Length: 158
Image 1 (cartoon, rainbow, N blue to C red):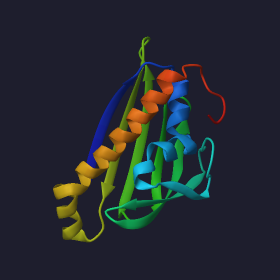
Image 2: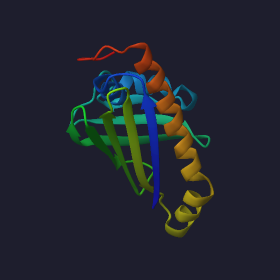
Image 3: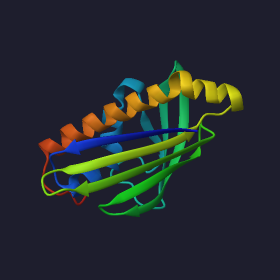
Image 4: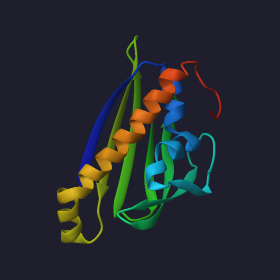
């Protein structure tokens, strides 16, 4: 199993960062390179606890689908999404938010396990973990940019 931890310091209120992180439209905008789009479940606006979204994207030259569900949420502190159907044997993404009086510290912890037993473990080590980290970094740069341009706390979709 691979684990990625990424910490992003955002000069914006915690509510703004929290809502952007669960905003389907913001996510799609940040993943244009992989043509990621929501095709089922919650396909626009803010996703909530117990809801799911199915993403379609192009990675490694293949079209892939993955359904994730928001397993747990405590606004604006954290939410956890898990893959319920898709290309991984297991994927869990914990999103944490902490306002330090100056900025919001957004912490992502992703745990995933590739399929195919030994071959999957080798793929995790050789390239998959690095690829997933870059996707997450790209997403977080987009969230940071949007949040710092729009610092008012959000109560609905952006």
